[in-house]
Amino acid sequence: SRYFTINDHPQGTPARELFELHEQELPSLAEGDVRIRNTWLSVDPYMRGRMSGVTTYIAPFELNAPLEGAAIGEVIESRDEAFPVGTRVRHMGGWRDIAQLPGEQVESLPSFEVPEQAYLGVLGMPGMTAWTGLNRIAEMKEGDNVLVSGAAGAVGSLAVQLAKARGGTVVGIAGAPDKLEWLESHGIKAVSYRDKDAAQLTEALRDACPEGFDVYYENVGGTCLEAALNTLKVGARIAVCGMIARYNEDTPSAGPGNLAMILIRRARMEGFIVFDHWAHYPQFLEEVGPQVESGKLDYEETIEEGLERTPDAFLKLFEGANRGKMLVRL
Ligand code: NDP
Image 1 (spheres, protein in one colour):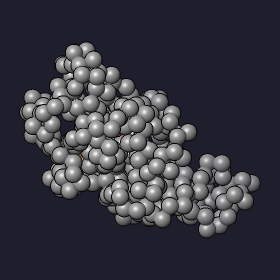
Image 2: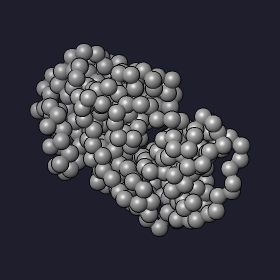
Image 3: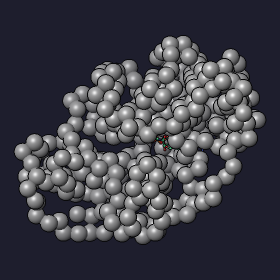
Image 4: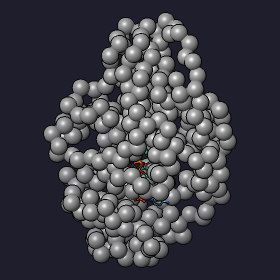
């Protein structure tokens, strides 16, 4: 099996040299274990937090030990009768080509007629995150005006579509021109944060939605948050899903100077971690799965080819190189 490790806890933006590819001979299977040939690996922004060497809501990655992450693959050897050879499964043994895990850490894929990698994106953890943030944290209601940052990414691109289906005006903030086009083509008003300070971004958001927002779905932080705070309606709810603009900061910068807008607009701001809501994953699948299957909900993927490219795929998340879910195909 070939697998990636990190050789240090990075400060600032991780360098490509941080990642090392190793090879090991896997032991023969213990009772209850399965061996999986991975076909798709997920890289996700939260992995940056696990590289920092401190425990947040999840333990840090250990240096020189195989990295972990969501992956999909096919069982090629099994000593767990729940997963016969040939079963397509999802598990956390990513960043490697062959994974060997106890069967209890592996799950079969749901049975929608979608490409299997959808279970790492729109019908996997990122999709579940979009649905949870909108419905369970921001408590979005019919007709709400919704603002989403990171709007063309894995989480954001589902959040904007779910909001659009029930909402009033939906505005998405993103970077590159092709992402803005993608948003517009789905009926979402698109605003670029590039080359804008918070005052300019505020103005662009007010142009897009003069009434202001009932819900802000936060993926980015920094100037996006500051501008969003200026455009809240009274009683607005902010679901704090992520703050990717900050993940590579080596010293934390000051927060937005206009936090008093929370008070002035009587707003509520709540952070969440999707894993705490995982008991609702079946409900999410039941609601969203058929709409992805039928094409009513669209999703995009950006794919890097080959295990060797996994660190590059991961680092590209911080350059905004992905539209929709960033994946590695093995
Ligand atoms: P994305 O697919 O959205 O990929 C990351 C995107 O973030 C990039 O494409 C880029 O888009 C944008 N970005 C990167 N750096 C910056 C920056 N400095 N300023 C502004 N935008 C930036 O990732 P995910 O959809 O997987 O995750 C989105 C967010 O959700 C992240 O913050 C992540 O940590 C969070 N998350 C939280 C979870 C939870 O349980 N709370 C679970 C899953 C994800 P662009 O071109 O627009 O800049």
